[in-house]
Image (cartoon, rainbow, N blue to C red):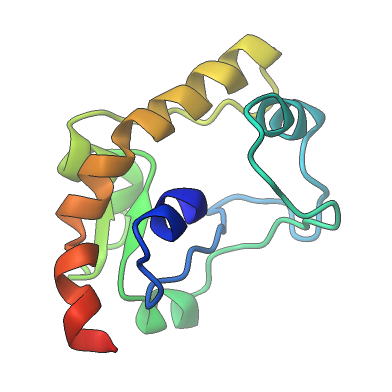
Amino acid sequence: MKQELKKRKIRWFSVQSAGLQAQLGSAMSVNSAQALTEAKIPFSETFNSRQLTPKMVEEAYAVVCMTEAQRVSFGGKPNVTSFYELCGVEIPDPYGQKIEVYRRTLEAIRACLPQLIAGLRLEENQNTTN
């Protein structure tokens, strides 16, 4: 997402990752790092997982959940959406699975980026937030 936003010159929107059940402070999984490396997507070698907090949700322009069940768990907060709402697909968590699953997950996310950007109205809001 960061690369796509940079390519489109959308500078007002930042991307962060946080999990609902992440083990706080854990390093990136080996398979995540491998899939990102293969796709030439930069990432921090010092990545540590973190949990999504109520404050993060409150301050976010948008929170995009990977599955519809995750979105529903937020009880209808107006800034919480999901891949399903925006793209018509869910992105299952590949954690603990083989590298092929991580690769497919990455490709599914990449395929959704244009729809995510359009659904979140990031390009439209570019002019109103600067």
